[in-house]
Image (cartoon, rainbow, N blue to C red; front, side, top):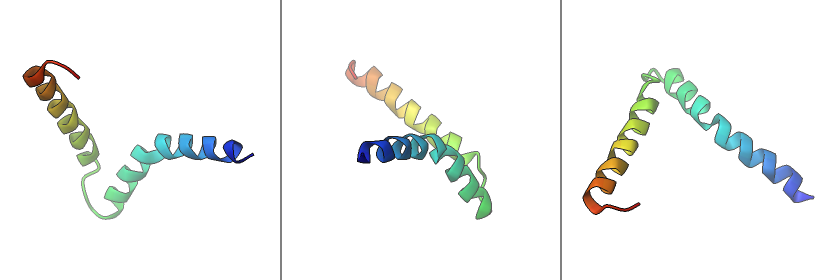
Length: 56
């Protein structure tokens, strides 16, 4: 029975994480676009890793 509670909980936690972080940043007077910048930075780091080491 617990699985019926946990699956939606995990699903919505992952789905709404981006929205919630943007909301909290805006609420505290920060630029909500910083969330996107973080994702771009992570993607850039991953590409550099692949280029340098040749594997995932």
